[in-house]
Length: 287
Image (cartoon, rainbow, N blue to C red; front, top):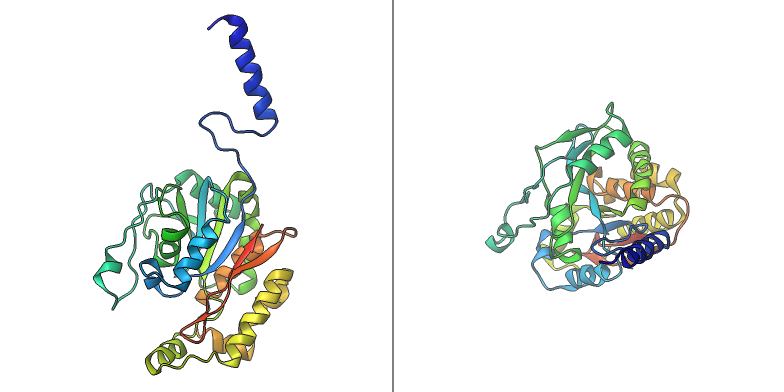
C-alpha cells in the first residue's frame, strides 16, 4: 500500500476508535445490563413452553456481552468461589428427569482472567478461585435460550451460605464496574421457591397461586425496582419470606442483580407469572 493510503487508513481507524465505533474484528464495549431471572424447572431447558419462549424473547433484548458472570442458586456452600476452569463442565445437579435433560451440554468457555479479576475486586480474604464446580442448571438451563451458541465465556460465582443477606447485596454492589467492561451479571434463582408447595400443587392439579406467594413476589419486585436494599435484606425474616423460602438459596441471587444495578438505570420485569402455582418466574432487568 502507498504511504499516503496507509496514513489515511490509520487516521480512519483512529477516528473510529475515538468515536466509539467498532474496529474490524472487534466488538465495542457497552454497559451491560444486570439481570435476575427466575429459572424454574430444569425442564425449561428442553421444553417448548411459556417460560422457554419467554427466555428466548428476553434474549433479543440483551446486547452481546464480552463475558457472563453467573450467580446461581445451585452453587451454595461455605465461601465465595469463582469458577476458574478454562472449559467448565455442564453439571446435571438433579435427579428423576428424562435422559434428554441429562444429555444437555452447554460447552461455553470459561474466563480465568475474569475469575481472577473478581477475586481481586472482592478481596482475597473473602473470595477464591475454584475448579470444583462448573455450570449448574441454574446457569445453563437459562443460557441455552439466552446464548444458545454457547459462544460467550461464562464464569460462575458461588453463594456463601454463611453471609447475611446484606453481605450478598454488598458483593453485588462490588460487581457493578464489570458492566462497563462488557460483562453481563446474570443472577438466577426464583423470587418465591417453596418446592413442597409447588410439587404438591403439581401433583394435585391445584393452579391457584397462594396469597403469601403473590404478596412476597410483589413486595420483592417493588423493592428491586426501587433498589430498596434495607427491605430486601430483611425480607426473608417476614412471615411471607419464611413461607416463600424455606431455604434462602433461590432468593439470594436477586440481591446480586440489585447490587450490581447501581443507583441509576431503568428496572423492568420482562417475565412475570407463576409456575406450579407458587413458583415465581419473575425476571428483573436493569439497563
